[in-house]
Length: 220
Image (cartoon, rainbow, N blue to C red):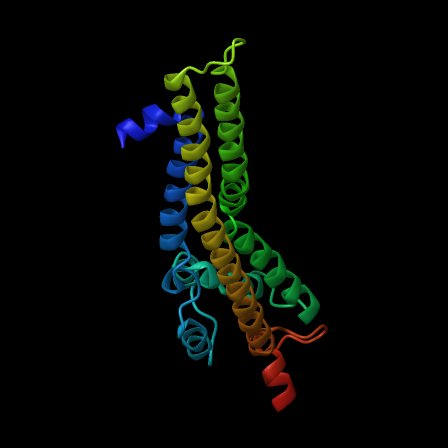
């Protein structure tokens, strides 16, 4: 490996940096975007069961908010109902929407950097190719002879950097598309969960001009 790096010349070092950054981001996003950490399967059903008869305490809501990204979105709606029992459905939907937007932004963190690595790596490889071609042309002497050592060095720079750039770009692009699709899937899951929880929480909202929850008011 050291001999390859030496043969590839100085253009290989930016590519090595890109490979380290790309690998680090792939590992970090693979851990962060696991379903158990973002949108556990049974979490919404547990929240609905928990709030079937009454709203949970602030400690339970705080624990829910720290459990996952979906839990943070659902906890935002619960906090809104607890803090302002008279809020209307439009306001509650806005609370869910704002909380979901923040969570999606966090889920998309570092994806632009990974996409930049996938885009920049072949360009850096092309730069190495150009540098290698310059070395090849520089090996030609005015008298028609050639410097074999310089010619071999130019060929090595051109080929190694091109290959290394593609080796970085292809998996980086594949993981970028994979993580982007996963974030989109989680976004839909959070939207559907919030949509289901809105009418459930509105049962605890106090109607305007009435001191009883909406469910009790409709029952009477």
